Structure formats: structure tokens, C-alpha cells
Amino acid sequence: MQTLSDLYFASSNRHKFEEARSILSHFGVGLKFFRCTLEEIQSPSLAAVARHKARQAGMLCSKPVIVEDAGLFIDSLKGFPGPYSSFAFDTIGNRGILRLVTGRRGASFRSVIAYQEGKGSPRIFEAEVRGKISRKMHGTRWGFDPIFVPEGRKDTYSKIADKNSVSHRFLALEKFASWYLGRRLSSG
Image 1: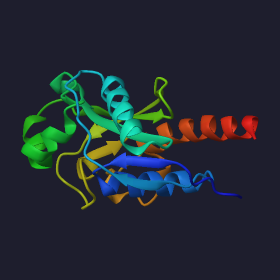
Image 2 (image 1 turned 180 degrees about the vertical axis):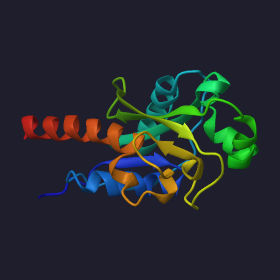
Image 3 (image 1 turned 120 degrees about the horizontal axis):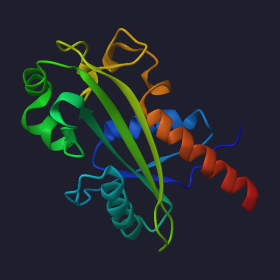
Image 4 (image 1 turned 135 degrees about the vertical axis):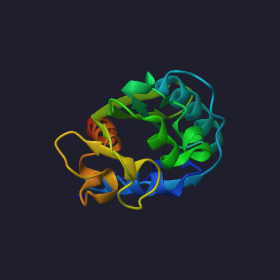
């Protein structure tokens, strides 16, 4: 399968890029890293945050580019940390989240991919995986992976060998890849 490689992933987070590159490679889409720090607006909407970042990335990169914004939404905390997940992770981490979640453990991990090309509006692809917060940390992967257990699984994202084929990021990137490849095929 021919790989399309004129697409960039804008982020300061190399882990997100590596996951996205691995996932998209299964669809024949190549991805290059565009390291940058993008302003993150404060909004209760992941899509609004991703749109804003995609517009910035498009201006900085001047190439077709995607950005990803994700959030962990915990039911008993009324959706906290949600779009503020990066800040929550940097300040209280997994241990802090585990201390906050004492009752119901239901949660979802959501991902938004925003594609920007030219000056138009970013195209948005969203996905969600339901699950729960574990009672203690399991595994050592980055972010909230050691405390999130997706529905239908017994282990956290950190302990699941095939995480990149079941995660919220995978599902959003799968939607994006389907659209992107279809668009490429119809224009070429």
C-alpha cells in the first residue's frame, strides 16, 4: 500500500505523535512531526480547543496538519478533568485523580482530531471510549493510561498490548483516515 506522507501532526507531545503515527500507518497514511507549542484556549469543548489549535498549526506549518485534543471525563466528578486533563495531569497526576474518585468510577476518554489545510475551517473527527477509573495505578505508560480501564477489558490502557487499536485516539484517527483517504482517492 502506498503511504501518503505530506501530512503533519502538530504538538509538543512526542508520545501523542508516536501513537498517531503508529495508528495512521495501519491505514497507509504517513505522518511527520511538527513540534510546536500551541496556545490552548480555555473551553468546556474539546472540539473548540482542537479547532483553535488547528488554525494556529495551519498558519505555523503551512502544510496539511492535524492536531489532537483529548480528555478524561469522570462521571462522579461531573466530567472533570475533561478538556483540562493536561493541566490536571501536570498538577495532581494519576494519584490525585485516584484520591478524588471515591465512589462511582464511570468515565470516558474522548479524542478530537482537527484537520487544517489552507485557510478554511478545520474538519473535526471525534470519538469516545467508555470505561472506568481503576482503584490503583496499573502500568507505566504516559498520561492517564495507568488508571483508565475501557469497557469490555480488565486492564488499564497501560496494560493492554493492543491499546492503539481500541483507544479513543484510534477511533478518532480511524474516522479521519477514512475521510482523508477517500478525499485523496476522489481527487487523484
